[in-house]
Length: 82
Image 1: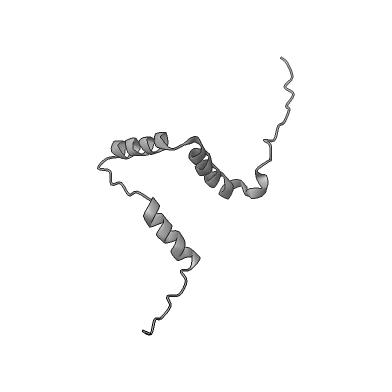
Image 2: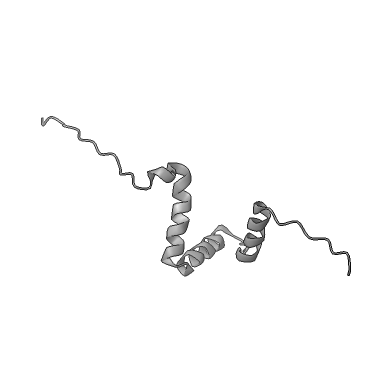
């Protein structure tokens, strides 16, 4: 029986990096207009669920997970008529 050394299990960051390499597509643009066109094409091809997931990933760092059900603050200001 050959002496087989077992490979250590990949860490979480190695797993994420491998998944990104498999899923991400790198596009090189020659101008800002071309980059904008590529970005628009990407988001037009995305499903509504993918768009909402991306929006949530952007929202969460600013407002946190506990602010999901929060509402906008409202205020009333009385301005005297002239």
